Image (cartoon, rainbow, N blue to C red; front, side, top):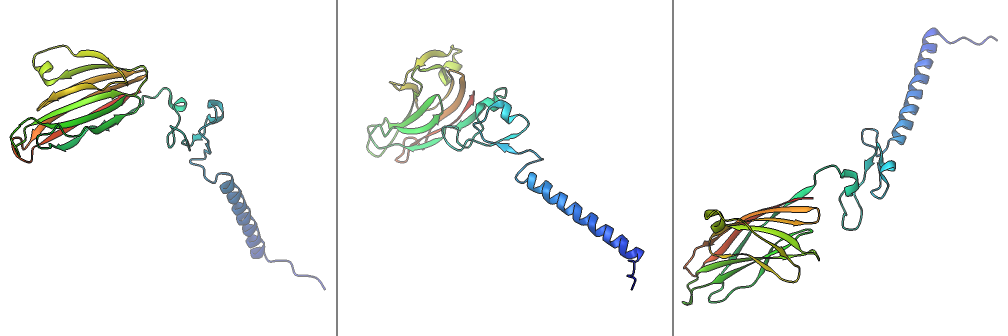
Length: 218
C-alpha cells in the first residue's frame, strides 16, 4: 500500500514550524548569554584592572570606604566632588554658653561645630552670640583662607592659616554675620559659604540660626 504524500499546504506548514522553533532556540540562547546585561554589556566587579573592565560595565564596591561607589581609578579624568549642607537652629540657654553641637562633617577635611551663647545676664532674657569652630581631620592639617562679613565690608584680605586636628579654630564669634572659607587638603578643595543670625533676640526664646553649604572638588 503506497503512503500518501503530504499536501503542499502541509509542507509549507512544516517548514514554517521548523523556522519558528529555530528562531525561538536562537532567541533563548541569546537571552541566556546576555542575561543581566545592559545594552549587551556585562558587568565586572570593582576590583578588576582597567584592561579587564574595558568595554564593560563596572559594579560599585561592595565593602570598604568606597562601598556603593565606583572606584576613582575608573573615573580619574572626571571631576569629582559633592555638597554638604551646613544648617542648624540652636536655642540659647539662659545665662549659659550652651552646648557645642556638630553642624557638618566634610570627608577628608574636618568637622564644623556651633554654639549659641546667651550674653544677657538678665534672667529669662537672652541675647545671642553665634560661635562656629572648625577642627581638621587630616594629620597634616588643612589650609584655610577665611573671610567674614566685616572683612568683606572693609575690603580686607582673607586670613590664611593651617588648621590642625589637635585644636578647634574659630570661624565666627558674633551675632549676625556671613562667612566664607576656602579649604585645601591634598587633592581636595572645599568652598564654604554661610551666614549666622539671631532669631527672637532679647526674648526668652532667642536662638541662633546658621545656614550654608560646603562644595567639595576632588
